[in-house]
Length: 381
Ligand SMILES: C[S@@+](CC[C@H](N)C(=O)[O-])C[C@H]1O[C@@H](n2cnc3c(N)ncnc32)[C@H](O)[C@@H]1O
Image (tube, rainbow, N blue to C red; front, side, top):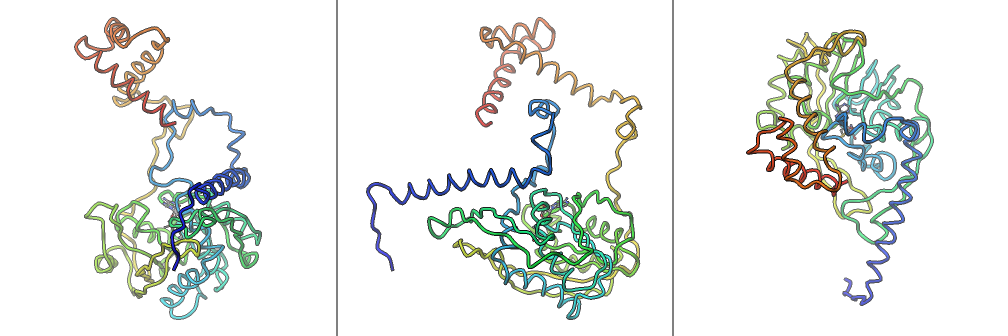
C-alpha cells in the first residue's frame, strides 16, 4: 500500500506533462516518416481548396481509430493474438490448412491475416483495410521489419505509461502470397466469386451496413462452396435498434443469405490488455464458419456512379440539388467578400437585401447566424 505524499511543487505532474509533450512531438515526427509514402506533403491542393470543395473523409473512421490494435498486434498482445487465431482454427476443426484463396476484410494492423497465412497453406491471402496508418505498419510487419511508435494507453498506470515508445515487430517476413490491398470493403475492387474463404474479423459490427447486406457481399465474393469465417462481436449499440442483430438472428438469416453448414463457437477471451493500462476487457466472441450453398438474393453491388462522373467529356447535368447548392454558395461567397474590417452586421444585411439574395425581415438574423458559425469554426481550427 502506498501513502499519499503530496508534492507541494507538483513535480510529478510536471514530469508527466513534460514526458507526454516530448512523446507527442516525437510521435509526430515518426508518423510523418511512416505516412510519407502517401505523398501528403507534395500535394498541390491547398487546405482551403479542400475545405471549399467539401472534401470528406469517412465520418466514423479516422486515421487513429484502432490505433491500439498496432500495439496489440505487434508489441504486447501475444496472448490475445493467439486466442484470436485459436477461435478460427478451432471452428475449422483444428487447423488452418485448405483455406485456398482468402480475403480478410477490415484486417486492421494485419496480425490475424499474417498468423493465418503462416499457419495454413493458402496460396494467396489478401488483407484489406482502408486505414492508411494501419496498412503502412502492416506492410512493414509483413516484410519482417520493425517500427517504433508510442502507445498512449487509455488508463495509464504510472507516469511513464502515459506515452510508451514501443517496438512493433513481426516474427519474420511473411510467407509468399500474403498481400495488402487498401480498399473500402463496401466497394471492394475484386471480381465476383474468386475467393475460397472470406474472413470478417471484428468487422461486421463496425462497418455500418445491415447484416443482410454484409452477408450478401461476402456471398458475392465467394466461389460456390466457399466459406465465410466471422469472428468478433456481433452487435454494438451505435447501430439502429433494428440492426443490432444477435447470434440467433444471424443464424436464422444464414439460409436466406445463401449459407449453410454453419458451425459456431462462443468463447470469452481477453481483449486489449495493455501492460501499461489499468483498463482491459473480456469479450465473449462469436466465431462461425458457414459454407456458400447458393447465391444471395438481390446482392448489392458497389454504388454505381453516374456516367458523367466516369467520363470526363460528358456534360454535367444541372440538377435541382446542384441549383440549390449554387444559390447557397453564392450567398456564402457574397457574405465572406463583404467582410472588410469596416462593415457591421447591419451593413451586410442591407447589402444582401439590395442584391435580392435575402428578404429584409430575415437578413440581419441570418447574417448573425452565419457569422456566429464562422467565428465558432475559426475557434475550433
Ligand atoms: C474493430 S477493427 C478490427 C481490426 C482487425 N480485424 C482485428 O481484428 O484486429 C475494424 C477494422 O475495420 C476497418 N474498416 C472499417 N470500415 C471499413 C471499410 N468500409 N472498408 C475497409 N475497412 C474498414 C477499420 O479501419 C479497422 O481496421
